[in-house]
Length: 265
Image 1 (cartoon, one colour):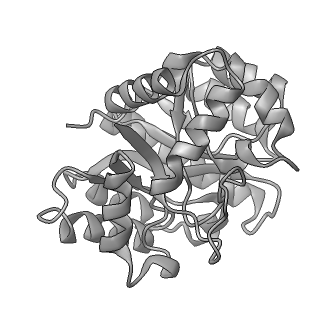
Image 2 (cartoon, one colour; image 1 turned 180 degrees about the vertical axis):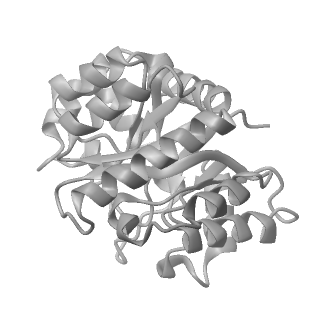
């Protein structure tokens, strides 16, 4: 059994293919998938997908509810109450995707920080885990997380691609680390391949971030270049290749960690 903790199933690339994608996931041993909410509207969309496919794929789909740093400029007076209402849905297992992204700065840094702190406070109020994004913003994100750390329960850094210092700083805060197909990339994933052995197994989770970040260790690569949850096994293989544990151990431990972290049934 595998759990994919981050999938963008509301993406247009999946629009007419969702049942087939979920069937292929099950065939590949991916029995639970967490769909990523990146705005109020996208959070609603992924929750709707959980409802729509519950009867056909029982207890397979879950969701996060949050506002991505790219969308922070749209944070308004009703955003917090909307997220709080969405978080009450039975399928929602975390607040996020939230955090800071100083790489593209699609929202002003001050707006990102405001939306981020508001969602940290909401997660603390609801005693819910956090699904976090960070790109080129580790120093500021760590400062904010350190300030709030005693009030929040658990948090995972989704799609970690940072350096050794950043990884150890996150681990020092007892955060969890999500690894994607970035680790399989022979061009830009070499540093992560070296770092992945430093992540304690009880802090490690795996995700595809589909349809993005197709694992480049697949042979052959799909012609459409679209990633999907069925390919999670290639990420597990790459992690195992760069650690001492077998693929079976990586599967067992990341699954147990995700079940506990998100309180999945």
